Image (cartoon, rainbow, N blue to C red):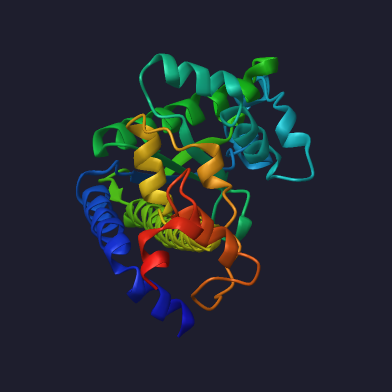
Amino acid sequence: MAVIRTMLRYKSFLLPVVLLTVLAAAYVFQFGPRSYEASTSFAVVNPRVPTDRDLLLDPSLANLNGDNPFLRSSDQSLISEVVISRLASSAVADEFKEEGLSTDYTVSKGINGNGFVISITARGDSEDRALKTAAALGDELQRNLRAVQKVNNADDRFLFTGLAVTPLSKATEQFSSRLRSVIMVLLGGTVLMFGAVSMARSMEAAALNRQRRKVQTDRAVQEMPGGNHTSEERGSMDSHGVDTPVASRNAVAPAPTLNRSRGPQPGTRRSNRMSSRPQGEDPLRTPARVTR
């Protein structure tokens, strides 16, 4: 719930990311790279070795070269393992690459790991390329199957042969590849969403910090003597070249004066009387004095 509330709070940042993610996922699903798969399988058939009856009926069979090394093996699936190893070599992959075929293929034992069945699966970015790669692998299997048995020039009657069990018909599209691409886009969009929320929270925190510092600066300036101007006003004054004297910034308020009663103070009456008379006049000879 906290995550949902946070996302709703910063929805102005999330909506563009969500829209971009949805559009990217739709584009990848509709126009992104596709994968097609074509499969076939071959059965390795044992040779028909002449029996004693066949030799009696046709004595010329005894003169045939039956030196096939795989016939002497106790494991009849050895021939399949040898062929699979040769098809999985890098030489075959390089040859396919030069011919413009796909190098994404697998050759393995068939049903239940039975060595007498070899499965071939080829994948390509188009249906035609997948079919051509699977067909080329089938031809390569037949050539290798014959080549490994002809090391001693054995007669064809004593050779294992490959029989196509499931011939090539068409290549099927693998929707899982497109789904994987869409999932990757959605994961990237999710990361961008959380990144957008984090950025929004950082911007909000930075704005609050700036506002808090501004308030503290204005309060400190107003509390200083002679600091009637706010920090913005001082900044504008400085920017316009108005010089504020240092003495006015650091001025100390004058000490309060004591309220004294009005009228002449003791010791000052005589001086005031004398200062009010004209200079050079005798106080004893004034007309007012004579009249009185």
